[in-house]
Image 1 (spheres, one colour):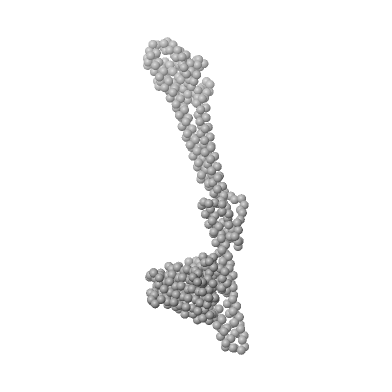
Image 2: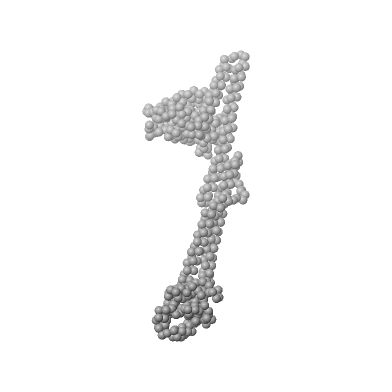
Amino acid sequence: MAGQEKGTLGPLRLRGLRKRWVFNTVMPVFFLLVLLVLSVSVGISNYYYGTMLEGLETRAQTMASSFNEYFMSNGYVSYIQKATQTAENFEEKGRIELQFINSKTGRIQISSSGLTAGTAPGTEDIHQAISTNQMKPFRGHDPETGEEIMAVSHPLLFNGQVVGVMRFVTSLREVNSQVMLVVLCILLVAFLCMLLVVVTNLLFINNVVEPVAVVTEAAKRIAAGGYGFRIEKQYTDELGELVENINEMSMQISRNEKMKSEFISSVSHELRTPLTAINGWGETILEDPTGDPVQLRRGIRIILNESRRLSNMVEELLDFSKMEDGRFTLHIEETDLQAELEDAIFTYRELFRQEGIELSYEAGDVLLPPILGDPERLKQVFCNVLDNAAKHGGAGKRIVVSIAAEGQEQVIRVRDYGPGIPEAELPYVKQKFYKGTSKARGSGIGLAVCDEIIRLHGGVFEIGNAQGGGAEVTIRLPAEK
């Protein structure tokens, strides 16, 4: 059994807890950020491309309406002249290329850039605009250059027939760069958020999981027999309370183990002493050739006393065993508490007189009514308390017992005039196996059994020091049936 110590523990790991923490906290945040980045990126891309397409469609709709309304009615030659003039004076030719396409050949007749004239783009927007007489958009790669473009084609009508297509074309290089830059910024923010989550989780693991690992290792050490091992307290929050509870548990187990060892040693000694006396006097009587009646009576009396003491110890051990596994029960009936107390006093008065101890009994003038209780168990308590008073307070040569009604309780007090109980030991005197500094014989479980009996009766069993010296036991039992 280990004493009080503060141990140092080696490297600690809680792999299972770490994995669960990663999967339950970090991974959901990661997937949420990925989903958020994808959603925002798609939304921004749609916004940029949608805005650009809307601008192209507005230009195409406005300019094509003007052509169809004012210029196409004057003939094909007038249309070509106006288209050439419009392409030459197009103000946004630096960003957008304006094309006029022949509806029959599909080739570019006039272009604001002058570089694509005579070529046939062949994109689907041109064919759809011609076949449906409606404006059609296009986004994809230019068949000639391979560059990613956005285009809008609007049919031009003469006498209800499509004679040409007005087409606006712009490169997506700048827009793609802007979208990519925004997406990269979003990814950077998401990465920083993820990094913050990871760092905070690592801090959490260091501040929470590692202390839990320390407590786990300490618990293993205690379970392996390192009773009394203490964890150094470094925390003031719930972890600090947990460490305090573990330390208290360790110390309590250490005390219990110490008391158990002392109990085993004490019981072994207590059993050996009367057995030795019984064996010794039995052999003496058996081998005494004289048959001296005085010697014979003396030996038999000692044998009876020691046998009675052994029986009491065995009864205490049996009661304690029942109390530990929950088999300790009462047989409740109407009980004259005062009569049971007086029987115990009558039993012990002569024994105490032989030891030079005066046993005084103070009873009130009013006859106390019966209560509900187990008479055998209550008498056991009275006998144990009287015997305990003689063993520990017999030096005072006087024991006073009283019984009285106090409110709704019947109260019994047993006081001795011995040295009393050290103040430091008072909180523990009713604990099992506890004997404190007393050298008196006993198993250390008698008072624990008494406390359990009184508790099962709904009463209170108190032990303290009396005013003027000596110890006093107070037993309070409910008087109501």
